[in-house]
Image 1 (cartoon, rainbow, N blue to C red):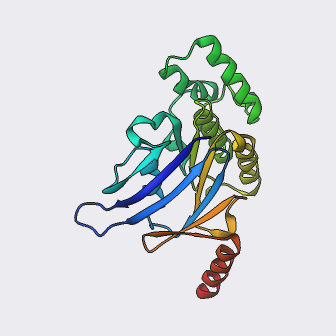
Image 2 (cartoon, one colour; image 1 turned 90 degrees about the horizontal axis):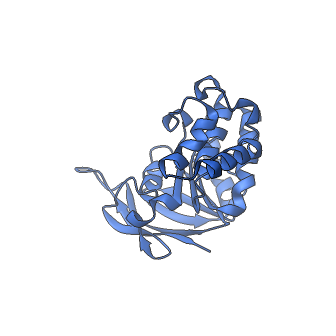
Length: 228
């Protein structure tokens, strides 16, 4: 069982106050953790640090005790907008792209692509351009593409925020398929729309605290009341 750990991470852009202050928590493989925070509170920045795309001002991220620059291939980040991470001409080429860049044997690559086309109900779309797909279909393609690389941890940045009800259910069903294979951190600004999770975290005023599902629901109720 692998462990992805955030250790006293602080981050701030030059000339600005820290966006994140001494953030610490962990995720293990097979575990789903939900993180809630209002827009612009630093959620995406935290995910980028965990994925190795940004370096913290202080602290570090480790995977099984090793520093971040040594494990970027073991952590996958799925963006809020799938258009930001898809570049191939067809769905099957998009799923294969990461493996191709890593030099995976073509025969093995074909087997993996075919398997994920079936697992995520994309087989009938394999020759389509991602540009022609619906938002929900695009997000499932993006998920298949990152999971084809067998990451140990999957970071989801508000992955269903642009989806309608049916597409949201299809995407969450796809995530459920891989829950046991990876550790998942699911980020959202809305406590009412969080998936089932083993633990819940709340990012507020630059600080992260662990809370219960009931506490998140209570906060959602207060926020709704405050806007009436």
